[in-house]
Amino acid sequence: MIKARTSFAFASWLVAALIFLALPPTLAAPADGENAMPQPQDSAAILPPPHVGMPDEPAAAGTPLIEAPAIVEVPPVVEGPSFLDAPVTDAVSPDTLIPEVPSVAFEPAEPIAPPPVTPLTITLDWYLNPQHAALLVAREKGFFKRQGLEVTLINPADPNVPAKLLAAGRTDLALGRQPLLHLLVDQGMPLVRVATLIDSPVTGIVLRQALFETEAEGENESQDSPRALPQLHLGYTVQDSATLLNSPLATTNGLPDGMELEDVSYAVMDAMREGSLDGVVVHQRHLVPRQLADEGIPTRMLRLEEHGLLGHDGLILMANRDRLSSKREAIRELVTALEKATLWIVNHREEAWELMTEAEPALDDPVMHEAWKDVFPRLAQRPAAVDQGRYARFEEMLLEAGLIDSASPVERLAVDLGAPAP
Image: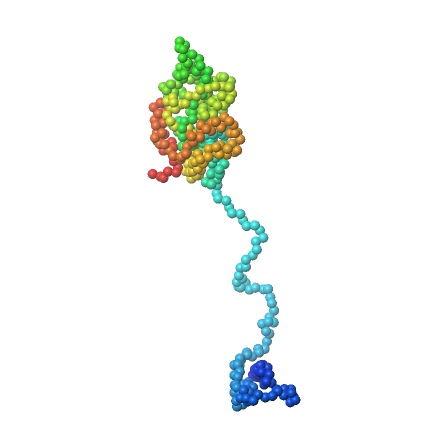
């Protein structure tokens, strides 16, 4: 309590001093009587100094009162060590929760995982040529990647191999032709068409022009009709060609009877240069005659659809029917990419050709460029769509010709993976 009164007395003295200093100079007392300032005449204006004291102390009459501030009780001093004197320690109780503090990363963040990619292999029917435009453009324009696919195109060692590899499960997809599909399905191979790349026939018989320049015995006119030709020795590249030419379909539609056929595989050009063949049956009729012409071998081509063979898809993509369920979604995405590529080609024909030749320099050839002009209008703009009537009619034609034992339903031959389920 003594300390409180002492603090209060000091505060009272300090307040009085400040008030005195704030008074006008005329009210200040001089140091001595010699230089005393004259007093003002109005004594009422002279104010006595205020009384500062304890609330219970009496004040002189006429003295203004200034109430002192309330006394604040200070807690008593407690004997013992202060909290400021407590020793600092790094020890932390195991029960103490320590907040997490953000830290600085000194290592690069883990890269974002790329989206999953499904690999697919496609075995071609022949070496790369303009017929494969949709596949090449889809690869080079990135349409396959955008659909989550990594597609590998494989050239077969033998043009008869792709369908066999597909049936054995050694490739995901293979290229072929609609007639070949009908024949192989009848033989029990688990094949099914999933897309069309060329929707019109591209098969033809390429014959030497010299065969048509000889005159028939007893006649003065040229042998323009293939029926008038002598027995022909022809080469073929795939077995389905031999099957069709050795059937009644050939003889009843203007082709000579009793043709001798020989498998020449990829050696078409060599066989024609040697002169051992009268002609060849090819599935690249837009290409081979031009190549032979550059070799100095003039030819004439017979289009099979003009000699009894019904219209059909000239180049199709086939899958293994037994393995289709595990690859269905990936193949559906592949067909979507092929459609995008084909539509881009239709809108940018020459740009598409430049893109293909840059990717595959072997295509950068005048003969290939001329063939491209013929192939371009035959590209299937709706690769997923199935012409069920066309497949049913072709199956019936083969059955009537005795080339297959029984007719297969269309859904076993060809499917549209993008179509809604019935």
